Image 1 (cartoon, rainbow, N blue to C red):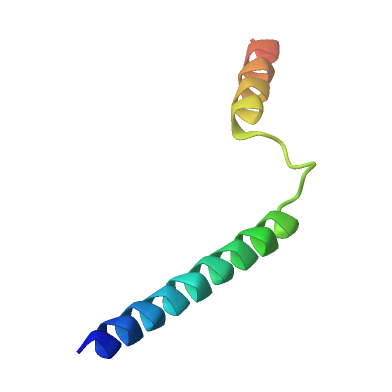
Image 2: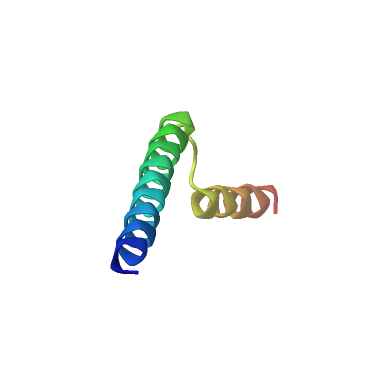
Length: 56
């Protein structure tokens, strides 16, 4: 009975470790895919407001 518990805990730990590694790799991949020069959305809204004000 004790061996079964150790087996279940070991398998669960391996699955959790694999999930963490997968998520870390996905996060790294997503960060590399982001454009660092991309304008911030708040800055873009501010720029749009300035354009509207210049037209007035």
